[in-house]
Image (cartoon, rainbow, N blue to C red; front, side, top):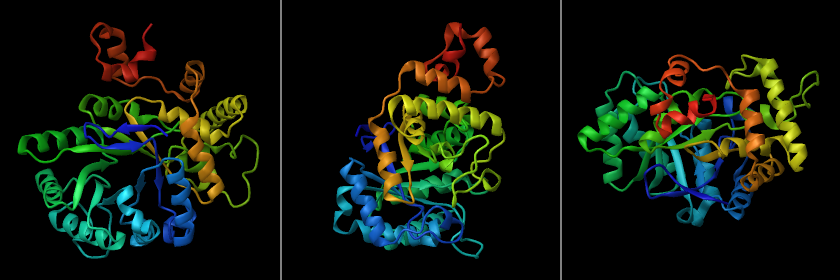
Length: 350
């Protein structure tokens, strides 16, 4: 297992993170998994044996049950690992039970600490943008949690590039703790973040944590053109996160993934994970599994290195035409592009 620096912080995290949305899965999370404390302990053991040191959850996962099960399953080993959770989503029906107000953040942190059975959070992430609460209020509340010792580092999730930059600028202006990470969706099924989020993170020294790097299982190889998905699988028509807008392109990508996997003697899931792990600014991939067999397969991706030719094949089949102003940058500004610019434009230059 490789360990990478999380953004500009001094914290080193494993390139694979164990996601816990399936711990105690209920409501909308039930389809991800319904893993009890004993099952969670087994998954944590597998992950730690493979070198995983970061475990990601959120208060909204099964209304806090995921946090409770993670805390119980970690038990006395809690101080030997890193625990990340999130705040922002609705945790009740009241007018202040959601968002990134000082009220909700402080209350959310205290509740997460109780459920996890710990007195500190290694990484506290704002789960989504809140366009109605002043950033100064949000960041001051997070800074207070760091100063009080209840939180070690802070990050954001699902922020647009301009939102991330505004938050970093606000933190710098007021001397608040900055975000060290951004948790986003990124996979061979959809590479939208390469347009603005990846360059911004690389330029600003913000680490990228990737959620759903196998696109909720779409890239595992079990979904093939003209073949019925295995019983119990979610079907393309039921997919809402991530949305599938081009099934033909998805199937073309899956065929390339499977072909490369067969050449290496590994699963399609491992190929999809290894591809994303090789991309610029990516620090760690968050993987969750309903079964221990699936988890063991995902963990093995940490040892898979794809060739430059294989990465290029996957880039080509899954890519999209450059959007404006990037095609214009490629045509007229190639003499003065930064490393951040080249994460997107590099392969488009002649």
